[in-house]
Amino acid sequence: MNFGIVTGFLLMMLIIGILKRGKSPDIVNYYVGGRSKSVITVTGSLVATAIGGSATIGLAGIAYSKGAPSVWWLFSGSIALVILGIFWAGKVREYEVFTLPEILEKQYGHSSVKIVSSLVIVIAWTGIIAAQMISAGKIMSNVLPGHYKLFVILCALIFITYTVLGGQNSVIKTDLFQSLLIFTGITAAVISAFIKFGPLNMSQLPAGHLDFPVNGQLGFTEVFMFFMFVGTSFLAGPDMYSRILSAKDKKTAQKSVIAAAVMISVFAILIVAAGLYARMIAPGIEAESSFQYLIVNTIPSGLQGVVFAALLAAFLSSADTCLLTSGIIVTNDIINPLFFKNRLNDTVKMAATKLMIVILGAGSLVIALYVNQIIKSLLLALTVYTSGIILPVVLGFYRERLKINYYGATAGIISGGAASIIMKYFMYDKFLIYIFPAVFAVIIITSIITSE
Image 1 (cartoon, rainbow, N blue to C red):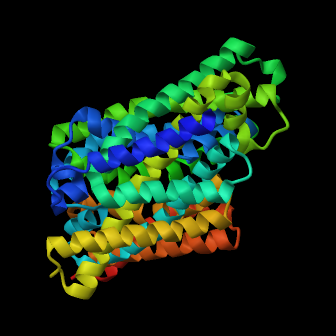
Image 2: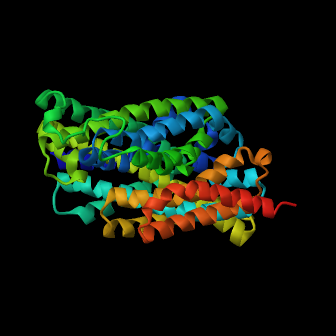
Image 3: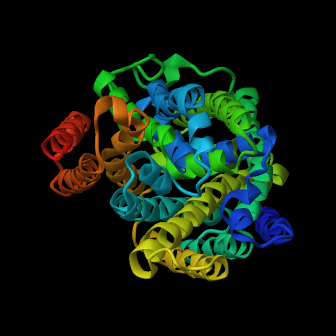
């Protein structure tokens, strides 16, 4: 029965994605949904994009292992979204572009920033898409054990298909439905655990597991790292900006971002509660299986399929947004300016974007089939992205006041991305805390040296 419900959900997503692709298949509709989306639609899409594999299976796993302070993983993102909504969301919407790299080009007045940032984003986002595929495969394996790789491939084919066919309209429409399903499913899991086992009991959890804001497992340094490499990705993320650029106007963008921040905070509390309940009732299981264990052992069998479908919705809603964003960036910000001097017409650009979505989806699928740790894959991708992109974007809003030029921004992107890869490869994670000040210094010094 559970398998039938989850399979039905996958087919429903495919049908919704195809039917909601929009009547006018022009580039503005395909890339940014016609710049016509309402507060409800944009908010739902932002929430669905944020609540992916890292924020469900991954975050529940961190809560299971390290306790209540793990809520800062998503709280950091919510705080970043409030800042974005107050200060920059309106400015982002006013740019009237398609992508984050184009915003960088507008800020610094040179295409080199756009091309370099595009390369970093696509590399990082391929890892994030793979993490969502891994999550989807793990969930489906709970429904029908023994077929992990088959389910990874099946889920990938479905969201790649509706993303290619419908573009932004399909993705946003499916996101709205998915956000409602995600909330229902996660809430049902926590309420069922409360009914069956009562309130969280400190005596049945490791010492300090309910301490907040920090504990022995997650101290101030670890929480600060959450803000650096998770929270900042909400502050200037290409997926978040694609939603802002789809809003019908500046006010809609601002309201949507702040509303999403509030909703994501609620999700954070619910997901961490799920991980803590799993630790209380089953202290010996694998951390990243904690949410699935809770579903199987607290929810009536007839409803388990619905909750598994909700978790699957979380993964697909992040994966489709990241995949579409990456496909658009490769075509619009790398191929068109670098190889065709911006001469591709809209019809060719749309066809090329669809091809890139398929290629990038296939690449992410290969990664997902050979890496099965969600948080490891996601943290690597986010570290590379945030180290190189965040400061140039944020500082770009004040470029003239700070006297920063495109040489400085480009140097910051390259040095930040490269340094983070080197540190991760050689396991120098303890030095990552210094990467933002170092990138800031590179941007400022390079701008001074190259100033006219």
